[in-house]
Length: 68
Image 1 (cartoon, helix red, strand yellow):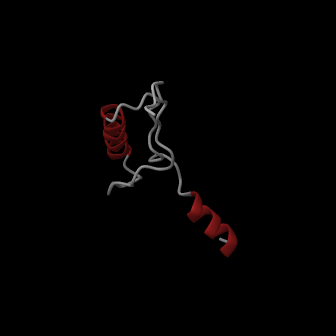
Image 2 (tube, one colour):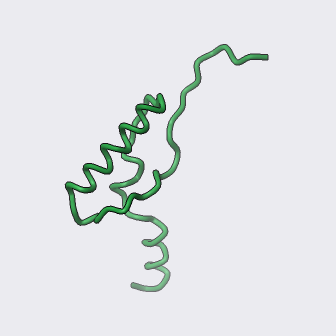
Image 3 (cartoon, rainbow, N blue to C red):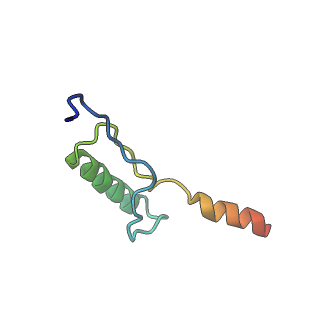
């Protein structure tokens, strides 16, 4: 049976991290622009930065457990 209703698609989770220096705002901005373009080209309607501007929550959790 074919699906005859439109479906909503989005990116769930983080986009693979590019090799950019997170301390370089221009490099991060360029990487985010590329992620947005890739999502738009894929037909997604809800575009995000792919988590590129977010801290790695796992690192923060491990640091907290280590007491640092």
